Image (cartoon, rainbow, N blue to C red):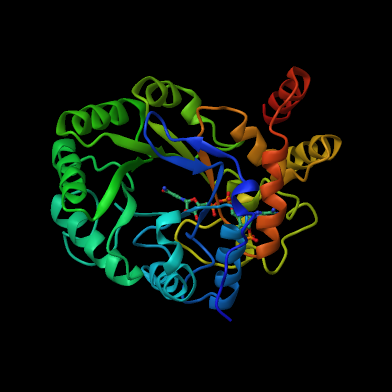
Length: 331
Ligand SMILES: NC(=O)c1ccc[n+]([C@@H]2O[C@H](COP(=O)([O-])OP(=O)(O)OC[C@H]3O[C@@H](n4cnc5c(N)ncnc54)[C@H](OP(=O)(O)O)[C@@H]3O)[C@@H](O)[C@H]2O)c1
């Protein structure tokens, strides 16, 4: 049956302005790094995307290499988009990225103009889109001059293949330089996508200040630490979890679930229960409490995880006492 989105969807979500731009993003966005590849179930992926949009998630985040195999998340998204979302194209912010290894030889990785332009052309074909809303440089390239990478991003916008530009995993100083070059080129940086969670705090040491002073938005990834900051690993490693799935490509692995981490997760889970939240909800709320965060890009393997996680926007206020307890658990 043809998909018709829930007419109440925009009442269910909070939208935050992305830096000083004209764009607002949902406080929770959906990422397609895992669970959308050819090794995954296409109908489950479709259910997740539909439920996300029905709840006001207007932003889907992809990259050239998502799968596995690389490229297959974009292909599957393209199929589902064609069936279900074409009529909603103007209600969606679709992003993709290039910067990690994608094809063989010297032109399929890092940050050259050659790679970025070719990669976005391939991504657009796989997704069946004329343009993406945001195109990111996925990680800094120590060898390519930053001017070349930023000029490539500016070119892509001028060609109409992307509306906005983002950078991902840039450290504060290189982010500031990239933002400056993009400003000079006349294509301001819309957004930065860093890793940020209770377990990964580096952006508090300078990056958030740079983004705020430059009027650039911030969308965090792996804010559940790939599932660690949920209650799922408290009683062992479930068969259907990411840690058990041997997906490779940076996915959570069993040996990362240490006793030390588990003890913190247990204590955090107790606090979450006292707050009337699941641990997933509290971990996302803890990120969203900072208004400098535009959105968290959430990964899910099942539709129920969308329903559960989205409750985070109902309470992201923390008392001083709760914040201090979290700090002492994380120490
Ligand atoms: N820019 C970059 O370099 C970069 C890098 C990584 C990711 N990202 C983006 O960020 C997105 C999210 O990354 P991520 O998948 O690592 O993030 P995450 O949100 O930290 O982890 C997602 C995993 O958490 C579990 N989960 C989610 N909601 C849950 C709930 N309510 N209860 C229990 N478990 C729950 C699921 O694990 P199970 O699969 O075990 O069920 C899900 O697959 C990616 O899809 C991608 O778009 C960007």
